Image (cartoon, rainbow, N blue to C red):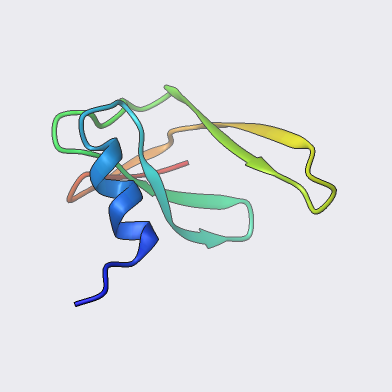
Length: 74
């Protein structure tokens, strides 16, 4: 059975206070995290990535809603 790199990365992050984006609709992000590591409402989330030129981009979002099942909306 072939394991995708995404599932490997998620399992590596379980012990850390890191989540992953499950859905993006316009300016709204749904973010999943490990059980017991969910941020509270009004906490900030930092999304790290790179643009097409390879430059580091950090976007700061604010948690607005707890969705359940270890997911928040920012």
